[in-house]
Amino acid sequence: MIIVHEKTIELDKINQNINIVHLSDVHYGAIRHKKIILDLRDKLNELPPSCDLAIISGDLADGSCVVEEDDSLPLKDVNIPIVFTAGNHDFYLGIENVYNACRKAGIIILDNEGMEFKDLNIFGLTYSFGEIETVRLEDLKSFIKEDKVNIINFHVPQNWEMFSSLGFDIQLSGHTHGGQFYPVVWIGNIIMYNMGLFKKSIGGKDSYLHVTTGVGSMDYPFRWGTDSELVILKLRKKINSNFIYYHRIIIIE
Image 1: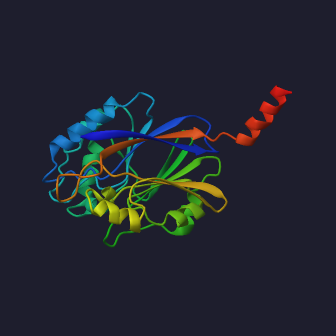
Image 2: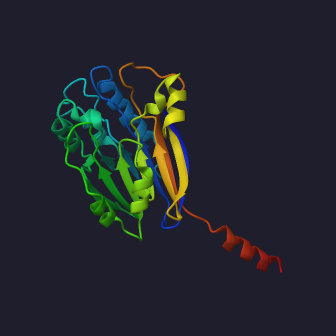
Image 3: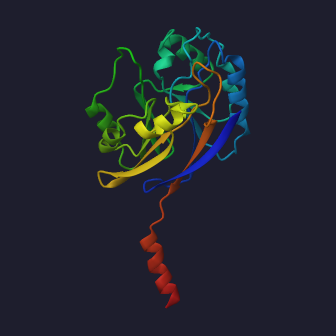
């Protein structure tokens, strides 16, 4: 069962309401096969029409079977754009197989590259356990646009402080499955950014990290204490409380 959660992120630089559907770790493979893609398509199409964009933070594939060209085709029927950046599992039995399936389904692939969408400036940083070409920090920094909300889509919830110092406002990650089941959930919550929305001031500005628990599962097809989830991230203009308070004083007088 895929559960839908909603979370709000307040930002200074956004000029319009934008709703991102964040998901990760579908783990399409030998255990979770065609049904999970169909379920994902149906759930995405049940979301409110106010949702603007879906972003997948890696591990669309499980790596337990070869991905065929038509395997992601049901996602072509989703009524909002879908953006995908690969994670480690996507490489195991051939990243080009995964990319070919994405292309046929109309999914936008961000492989160490970026795109603009409304007030958003999105960079997809590909992740693998193996040796792959990556992006220099100076190139990531040059990608930043001061007049837009800068988002980095990176499979693992690591390097948040570094990405924020470069100018990224939001990091979208998965990988952990939230621990997937107890007692791993408790351990994950102690040692890492395991699941949820995190906020801190980095370099004098608010920065956010969202770690989704994922859609699928790894190895064992069950969860205990975590949800298979889609998360609607509601990006909203930050309200200046001092400005509001000042006008309230004037109204009272």
